Amino acid sequence: MIKRFIVFFGLFLFVLSCKKNNEPDGPFLPVGTEAYTESEIAFVPYSAGDLVFKKSPDFTEERILNFKERLATEEFFAWDQTYFTFSYNPLMEIEFRLRYLQTENVSQKTLAIYMPYRDVTSAYRTNVFEMPIDTTGMSTGFFSEIITYHDTITINGNDWYNVYEVNPLTSTNESLDSPTNYSKVFFNSTFGIIEMDQKDGSIWVLFP
Image 1 (cartoon, rainbow, N blue to C red):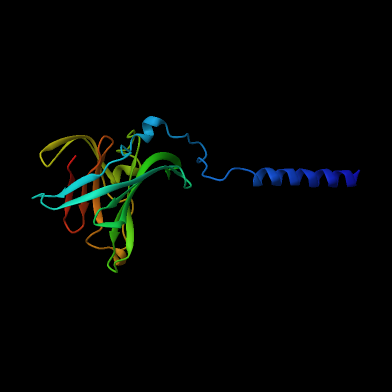
Image 2: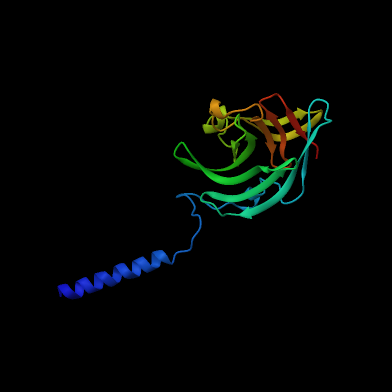
C-alpha cells in the first residue's frame, strides 16, 4: 500500500511538473486586473507617422520624432508599447508603455512615457512620466501631486482639450541629471504629446 502511494505521488508530481514546464511563456496580468480594451489601447493615438515639434517662442528650430514601431505585449506588466526616435539621434528613443501601476493597494491601468536624455557624463537615460487612463479620483489619489488635468488649455495660441500636464514620476538623482532632462510633458489622447519641457528652459511644441 505504501509503495503504491509513493508511486502514485511520484507520478502526480511528474505530471504537475510537466504541466508547469509546458505553460506558455509571456506576461501575466496582475491579480484582480482586466485586459486592456480597444478604447483604452487607443489612449495612445500613435500607429504610424512622424511628429514635428518646434522650439518656443520663435519656432525656427525643430525636432522630428520618427515613428519606429508599435508592439503587442512582450514585457511583464506591459500591455502595449510604441516607440519613436529623434531624427538627430536614433539612439534617443521615446517609449509609450501601457501598463499596470500598483498604487495604494490598487492596480491601475496607466500610460508611462519614457523620455530620453543624456546625463552629465553623456550616458543615455530616461525620465518617466506616468498618467492613469481613467481620471476618476486622480485629483485626490496617488497622481494628485504629479498631474494637473486641464479641460482646456491654450498653448501657442491653440486650444487643446482634455490635457494631462505631467511631472516626473520620481525625482532624478542629482548626480545623474542634466539640463537636457525633461521636467514636464503635456499629453492628450487625440494628439499624444503636445508639449515637451526641458530643464534648460527649452519648450518644444507639437505642430500637427
